[in-house]
Each structure stands twice: as structure tokens, then as C-alpha cells.
Length: 284
Image 1 (cartoon, rainbow, N blue to C red):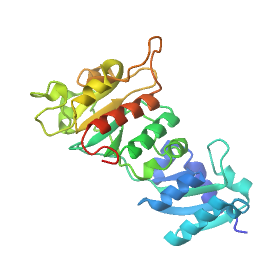
Image 2 (image 1 turned 60 degrees about the horizontal axis):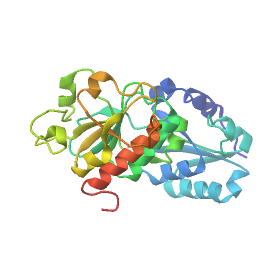
Image 3 (image 1 turned 90 degrees about the vertical axis):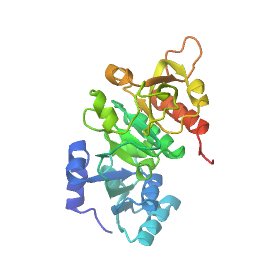
Image 4 (image 1 turned 135 degrees about the vertical axis):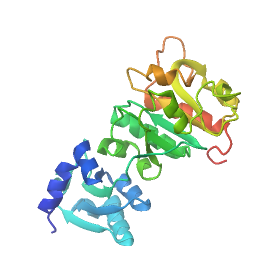
């Protein structure tokens, strides 16, 4: 039996907070499917601990085999001790420590991106990242006020998408100063001929925002914008007025009496519709 070392226990406690994860440059990954996805990715997996009983099952055995194939340190401990390292509800007896890539701002040039600003519920951000991965987006911008994408609940809800979709930091002042949108490479509404209708002559992607009062997504998608940044906002407050004023609002039509959709659901539908309409959609 290999007990969990005191140093790993202390590290796990530090990684329970966003500040600790940022300071250490590490994150804990919980759940067998997500751990297996981490082992398949380019993200560095530092170590894995699996429950002594859990390792006898199919997924537990697959984790151990994956660690050995990748040369990752794997240890064993009583299932209950492994679960004590976890912070999600009803965790399985498997946990991994990974090096989290830094969130670095960069210009949003050609491509399709999701920007989450003020999305605070881990399940919603995880769903959005999972959808961005499934639909082949070029990156997810983690905007101001958004929950840490390396929160264990986000990682779990993303089904491993955090290991495959580039996570990008938001340029400082992007949502406040008009010039910052330009420096990020994004075409704002009204920037040159055709920019407001998705066919602008500029080089950057079109700035769109999810808004229940916006144009139906099928209208925007029919214009075939190939490069875009879709901004989704806070679950209750939506997108900040300065940013919304420079973006083209797009909506998922719903039946009368329905106020709006969950941001994870709405953002996923909008991403799918825009990708399908552009060149190179999923499977295209």
C-alpha cells in the first residue's frame, strides 16, 4: 500500500483555491474520464493517485495503464483517502495533478472563438468549453469576472475539453476601451464596409454577443461569417453595455413565454449554428 504523502495532501489543500492554483501553476483533475483525457492530451500530468479498490475496475485499470504508457507517476491509497483529496460531489477514487497552461492574452486573428465574460457558475463554463471543443473552435477567451477554468467542477463539466481547446486570457481593458478591441484583432460593429453584416473587409473576426433580444442566429449564420468572436455574459446581468454596444447581438429564438436560455445551452446552440454555416464546420 502506498499512502498519500503529506506533501501531496498539503498541495491538494492549496489547489482547492483559485489563488493556490495560480500560485502553484497546477490544478487537480477529478474523475476517471477526465483523467484519461488529460493523459491523451499535451498537458503535463505530474502524478495520479488511484483507490486500491477502484483500480480493480475497468476505468481504474485504464488510468493505471495510461499512466504507465505515458511515464506518469501513479500511486495507490485507500479509496476513502483518495476521495478526501477531491472537492466535487460524489467523486470517484481517482485524482491527478496537472500543470495548468497560463492564461495569456493574444490577438484574436482569423478563426472562431468563444469569449466568456462574467460566467460564474462552473457547470456553465465547463459546458461552454466542452461545446467549443466539440465544434472545433480555435479558442475560448476567459474574460473578466469568469470562474477559473481550472476549477475542478469546470474541468469535470468540460469532459476534458480544457486539455484540448486553447484557453486565452482577455486583453486588459477589452470590455471598456474601444481601442482595446482593435488591438485584440477584433472587428467591432461598424468597423468598415460590411463589418456589421459579417462580411467585413478587415482582417479580424466579427464581434458577436449572445443577447435574447438580438437577431435570430439563423439570419446571422445565413450570411456565412467565417471568423468571429462570440461573447456570452453573466448568468444574471448579461454582457456589459460598453462591449454590447460594439458587438452584433445574436439570439436563439424561443417560443413566447420563455424569457431566455441557460448561458451554457444558449452559447452552445449559437456556436453550433455559426460553425455549421461557415466553412469547415464539424466534419466539414
